[in-house]
Image (cartoon, rainbow, N blue to C red; front, side):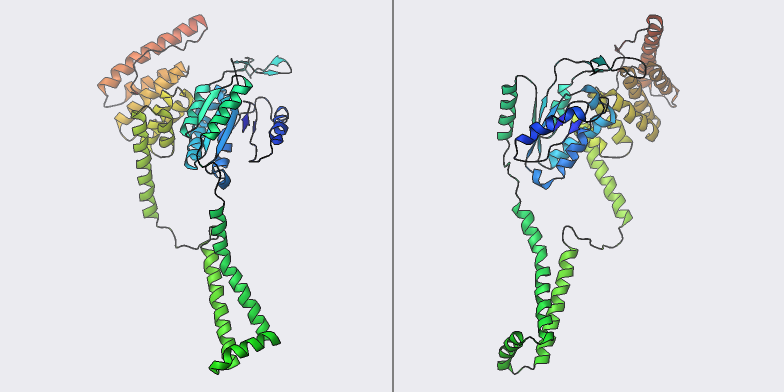
Length: 398
């Protein structure tokens, strides 16, 4: 899989070594340079490919920091977890050195505000995704070293060859009723048309028992019906068949959904306490409700993905049931907004914490302090015309 930060390319599994060089030449002719890569989609597709079970994905990426932020970054974490469940390891190489401006035709690209668009590699994010799959990651060195790294990582993967026999055996099992039904149908047709070889065989077979031919024909028809029933049953329960089940029990489904959410939240809390913030974010993102959104916001905050933290904590404020929950979510939202450079909104978040009744004394004091710090940062920004990213206020997300 190749991803140069501008366009992505998923190479099909193949033993043709020349295919890699062929597709590598196509990168320059793909999407516009400002197109956002979506490695999460490629990871999801790979996780669904049976032939990739127990295999590896070699990912060459620019590791642009912008591609790991916000909702896209969260989807990438979930997709990496899907690879892990499919027993597919990710071997990643960040093929980028120092960051710099994006160029087109030798000139720097600019955004709508006429600012130069820069790209900064984030190899730690690439390594984070690889670690979720049980794989490894590195930054590019010389070509021989990169090749040696990939070879060593691939050879370290156990059971690399996918097992195709089980799928073929399962498919053959469900094809058996069809074959038997067709053979029975051909035999019945031959008997009905009066083919001499078959009639003679049936007569010799039934003569010792003095059974009349009409009874034999009846037995053959009954056998044919039984085999056709087996055919219907086999296709109904085949992996690709549709089985008409009863209407779902919505009460049981709701209970199971809540149980699954509770399990994901519990797993997220354990990962959060253990310092595994990427795993925590994946677990929280798979659940619904206030606890899940609040936990996902804290995990993203710890991963310094402030854009996603803001998104999750805003939803947590909306989903909160008690004043304490609202205050906790709003306070951490203020912290995330501050570190995202959105000072005016951060001030509003801390002001909202102060307005919640009944007040939480600890959060109220911390919110008052943080609001004062943010207010000074706003005044400094207005005076100097330069934004500052330093923020050393109280933090409740611990």
